[in-house]
Length: 289
Image (cartoon, rainbow, N blue to C red):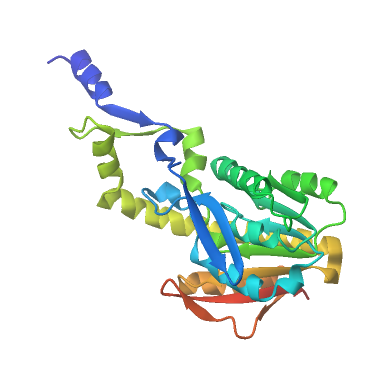
């Protein structure tokens, strides 16, 4: 075999995957109950690739936050609320039954699609308690253009900022795949199922886990940049309610450190510390110092 023939054979063994390969849109209508509130929305029931570490799933932090809000619904009445990292919207849809105005946000275009579908589902259910000002917009943490656009529409700011498990919802794989295709040898595989088997193999998982932790950590300053900006619009009249799930001590420390560096005070809400999906969770109220 000459050199040209060898190069052609190697080219045939390269598979280029665009972002659609990693997108699982097999959403199922699912019922959630929080106190007396019953919510139906579309979501994934399980993850099939590391790309699913986005808002397509309902995470433990959302369950923790929703339980807390359902028990303290009076704090939502008449409020203007923005949620960061809304995902499929389970927290926002619960809040929409009590608040005056609600903006749900996410940075991921695929997640925004399902979020908007769930908003339509909520509105079409003819629930008389659903607030009339319910919308979804793109918000990438630390993106001043996105924040400015939102504050042009909501010039008065918000009474409450909500977030649940948001520090893990970083779709880094999608962001990278927009810029480059992921290429690798076929390794004698010829079907999509074979390729998925490789992607879920040990080498792939090892690389993604290390990258995932890096992106978790690098996203935290941008999260607090965004929260600080939103808090300052109302000054002392706004607070950030964060449902935090502890997955790593380094993340626990980083959250506290970033809050302090951004001039914020984090106070644990008494009685909210609990175990959710075998992980310790807690509700924090975050305000400007």
